[in-house]
Image (cartoon, rainbow, N blue to C red; front, side):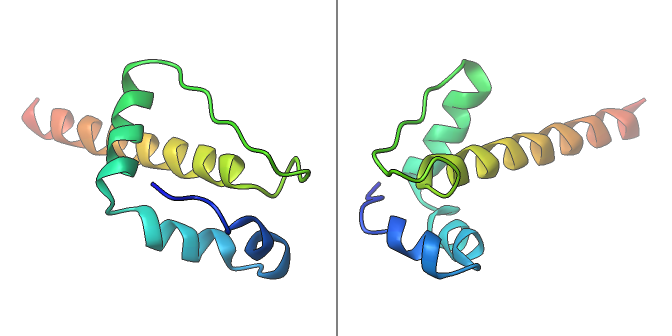
Length: 82
């Protein structure tokens, strides 16, 4: 998954996260990353001087949100089966 060249967009575009998520959400590498994060702790690194606005921070948010959605969907299915 190529993440380079995205850092300038973070600073220049308030809609970066939405666009970035739309770009990666269906990619196999992103899906593998979410699956890996579900199984164990992962470390996301970045080389930007920006500590808040960077790809790793955006990925962390995306992964956490996707795992929460998956957990809620699983709970919903389990509740219907009870």
